[in-house]
Image 1: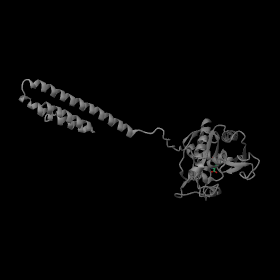
Image 2: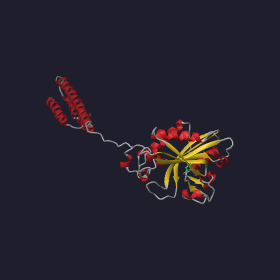
Image 3: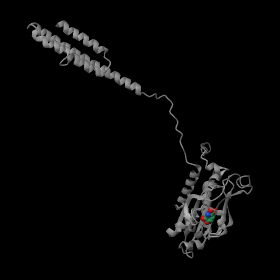
Image 4: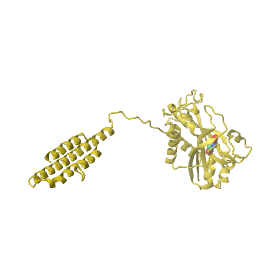
Length: 339
Ligand code: DAH
């Protein structure tokens, strides 16, 4: 029996040392130490032993059991350690590998300049107004003193949804929406998209952007308009920039003017960019026509106002020396990256 016990211990240890999986350890435990295991089978025969032999063999059997148990738990911790090390190895990352460079996007030059203009006007107490791009004839033309058959409608041919509903040709329509819903004092700008049935070339597009401005209050004069625009242009184009106000005609302002600024390229000397003029036209403006004020329910004997509308594309092209409008719409990253 003694030999049998020693044999069991030897076999168990051999099998344990060959064992490579934690789940097989349990099978070995059952095989050797379980109720139907080999050690138990031998202990069951203890009854056959003499009284002298029994304590000796009993002691040996206990030793074998605890040896095997010890060996199993030792093996278990070795296998667990191995499994952990292998997992760490599999999940390890090489921190010396160079990272993947993510290319960061940025704002489109149109958005940059629009934001800059908004900031400047908000600094002067203006708020930002929004108006519909699909509008009716009344708000785009009629209320702005452009009755049907007015010749100025020719230059603003647009896309009609029906006889009365159309894509707005100018953000000036927002003036009417604002004056219909707000009482003076009014101080707003309204950036937005406008539409005209124009063919695409370096300076024209059927879709472009304007920023409208409107101030209505008691005692507003042309000098307020000049001061406001001068501050805007100097902030955008620098303190050396000079403004030129030329008389013009718009049906919705009286008097009306066009505003030019000294050429960004030559500073006023004359070059190919300004066609030797020294100046570049940027916007239309004037004192809001009394008829327009009255039509919106504002008493023109008490209130006066100025308004202006500038082309955002022009402002951007001037600021960044871009000579073709189409570049702004093509979304070519090689172009956009430069700003
Ligand atoms: N709406 C005009 C245009 O598209 C620009 C303009 C001129 C707007 C005079 C105004 C203004 O508000 O007072 O050409």
